[in-house]
Each structure stands twice: as structure tokens, then as C-alpha cells.
Length: 326
Image (cartoon, rainbow, N blue to C red; front, side, top):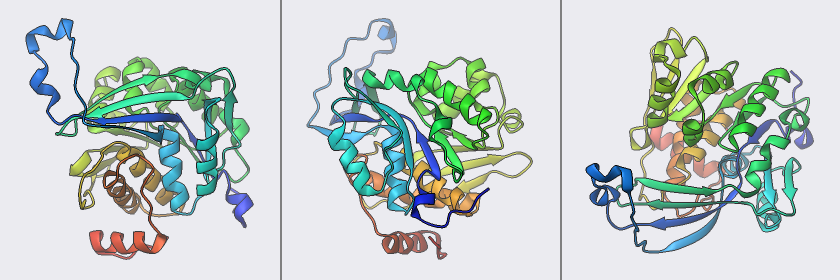
């Protein structure tokens, strides 16, 4: 593998394939569960009065790339967007994100995501696909450079995600498979096809259970298919499974105040990828992800937090009791 020598060679060292969208984020003061009748699940008709709504930049690819850029990487996003994307592009480029592989479709709108969380941080999410459906027309291999070390294939158009997995394998691009909430869109057979050859699988604890249920695999059997399985557990931290070894338990970073849980998982992924790219151990990489996730939940919106490298290192040492070289 060629070793980058300057900024130009660092651009595209990591490819972030996934959605770009505008998030409409709302907060419901009560609990969803209080209004869902178990004996009427076949005919749900509910309306929740949200306290406020905000429009934010979002999408898994944008959220992950935003964190990578703050940590000093120059990630390249692979995504499809609509004619309303230019202000978002300007923001990403000013953060240090490479947008040259973002395809714009003039007759489409960028995907939109409506997210509502209750007072227990349960979330209901609805996605208007828009230009995201065009992701299947993009080829991950054309976005790679001689210095590309890793790609993450995060939630996007399902067909596009499967194609990107195949493109990564055929192009010999190491990749992380991050089906996340799109686990529900795939059959067990397709999930197994897509994860084969991946360097790692990353999902939350509920999605992990669903992944195993759909594929019919046990956690031990999954370890024979993918080298690393990372399972995030919100405030309980994360667990990393590797074949033949004891699971690695990583604590969640202490949060000053939870303002918005949306995007915390993507922030964790950005930190984890940074660690893996820069030679940190799995434990350290997940701890970097944990700090990133904490920053994310402490602000409203998935990309509105900021930190300097010095601030990040200080918080890491205070949390985990060890210095971190960034």
C-alpha cells in the first residue's frame, strides 16, 4: 500500500458511501409507548404533537465524514443528491470533506429525513428517498485513489449499498459494512452476501439481534464470516467481537447533557474509522468513537458540534485515563 506524503494524497484515503439528506428533527415531550395499544397494532393511527422542529444537514455519509474531517482526515463522500444541495456542499468543503464523488441530479431533490424522539430517546424516522435512489448508478471503484485504505458502506439506497459491497470486493478496497437501520430492507441471504469480505460489521444492539435473526447465524458463527463485529449500545458503550477472542467492552464517554441523540452512532463510526486508519488498536479506536458520540449528543443536530484536536485529546485522557496521539 502506498504511503501518503501530502494533503493531496490524503484526500480519499477513506471513502464514505452513504446517504446525504436534510433532517427535520422534532422532539416529543411524552413517551411513544404510552399511546401504542398492543391489541391494535394492526391499525395504528397516531399523531404526536412535537414541541419544535429544526432543519439540519444530515445523512449517514455527511455525519461520518464531518467527524473524520474534524479529526484531521480528508474523507471522500460517495453519494447522490438533488438540485438543492449546493449550500450543504459548501459546508462540507469548508470542513475539509472531498465532494468530487457526490453526483448531483438536477431534476431531483436531496433525500429528506423526518426524525422524532420522545423523552426516553426512542425515535421514529421516516425517509423521503429523492435523489438517494440514484446511488445505484455510482461506482465505488471510480472514487478510489492509490492511497485509499478503507471504505465504509453506510445506509443508502439498498441496491446501491449491495453494489458498493461488490465493487469494494472486486476493487480490493477494504470496507466496513454498516447496514444500520437498513437491516430491515434486506433478506438474510442478501445481508450475508454483502458482509462477506468486509473488514468489519457495525450495527447497534437491536440491529445486531435482527441481523443474526435474519441470517440464522449465532454470534460465534458470524465471527467466521466477518473479522470484526462492532455493536453499539448507546449509553452502555459498545462491544467488539472478534473470532477466538474475548469480546472487548468499551465504556460510553460521560455526557454533560443529552440534547439530541440523533447522529451519535454516525459520530462513533467516524471516530472508530479514524482510529483504524491511523494504527490504533480496536479498543482505542472504539474509545475515540465513544468520545465523538458524546460530542454529538451534547448538541442539537447531527453536525453542529465542534472540537479542536487538543480538546479532544484532553477529553479522551480524562475519560479513559490514558493519553491519545492524534
